[in-house]
Amino acid sequence: MATALDLSSSDIQQLCLRYLQGNAQPSSFEIVDSNLKRTSDAPEGYLGNHFHLQVTLKLQQSDELKKIRFFCKAAPEGNASRMEYIEDFGVFQREITAYKHVLPDLQAACAEIAPKCYYGDKNLLIFENLIDQGYRMGAGRDGLLNYEQLHCALKTLAALHAGSIIMHLQGNERIPLEEHAYPSNVRKEHMRIRYFYQTCEVFKELIKTLPKYESQLDYILSEVTQRMAIIFELCKASKTRLNVTLHGDLWANNILFQYDKYDEKPLQCRFVDFQLLRYAPPAMDLPTMLTIPTTRQFRAAHLNELLAEYYRFMKEYLKEANLNIANILPEAEYYDSMEEYRIVGIIESLQFSHLAMLPPACTQELTSSEDGFNDFFSHKRIEICMKAFKSDELYRNRMTDMLEDFVDNYVLKPTK
Image 1 (cartoon, rainbow, N blue to C red):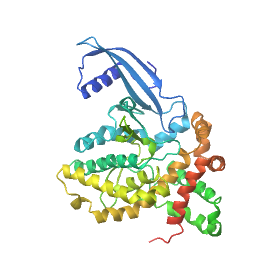
Image 2 (cartoon, rainbow, N blue to C red):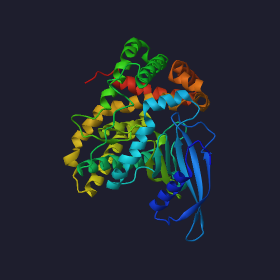
Image 3 (cartoon, one colour):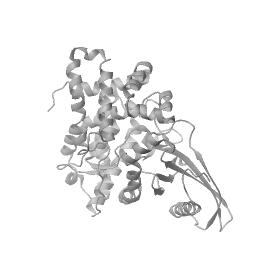
Image 4 (tube, rainbow, N blue to C red):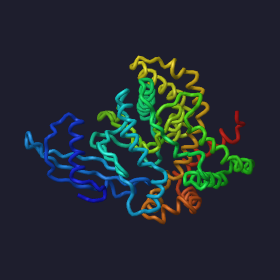
């Protein structure tokens, strides 16, 4: 057994016991073997390493050999800069809190939205392996989802939000979650504050290359940071609107789909990576899901219909709990909140995609060494992104699409 996950024999014993009991299977067994392998040789996430833990059991009642494969998410080893970022960011502890103290009761109140978590401690999480159940990511490198995938994902998102409402009305107290993706009332040197302002400088440099803004460039550049900074207020729990449990990081790779084997239509989906869990209005999650994995053209054609479908799903989930959505989130208030929070989707899309959409060769360079991570998260971010923008057509097209949405609708249009 590899030591990277720092699991004892007793830990593995308890892990398998929880798995068998959770799946209503005989729980008398002995461990025959266990081994740990990385899920892929390709670059992994910036904030974690991924493994498969396979355990072979001998069931005592039947002498049957049973193999269980778990998915493991661990903090990256051997990279001091990334570990410092992770610890300051608090992402592993936030996700452990989500799986231990929030999601179990929330899902029991409504529907399944996430994989079962069998272990969560320090900087390690161990889950059921959804890939072995036929789940997979739905987007290619362009990060785009189609209408059917988004429709399926909206149903799961509605279950997350409705489950939060039901829990709260049943008297379950919400666990305090201090905002850490866009924290306010912190020093200017805080790594997330520095990250935000660095990204704004990237966007200004990219905008300078777009000919359509040449005549208004000075005004646009003077407004970019201020208009983006609105997200620091919008991500907080609202004092006037309904607040629910939010995922906070809904891009394509955090949504796994299970498909019909005959026509490849998505049947259901699960969300992963609850590292940015927060409480805020549903309209904080919704525009993010409908913006990061879509284009302006797609949204012009389908956004209104998808917003209506989300509200319908919410209505159905609350009705099953004998609740009337009109008394909780009236339709007029829902659409008003979407109008206010629509900007969140494009800000999150830009903040996220300028890193996640980088070409694979660049991503491998950033994740494979401490120097690469430091370069992006400190002094070479503009240089790295400009190089990708000039040399990679997909990166350029996707970033241009997002920048034009932001500038046309939230910089050049007068604010209300």
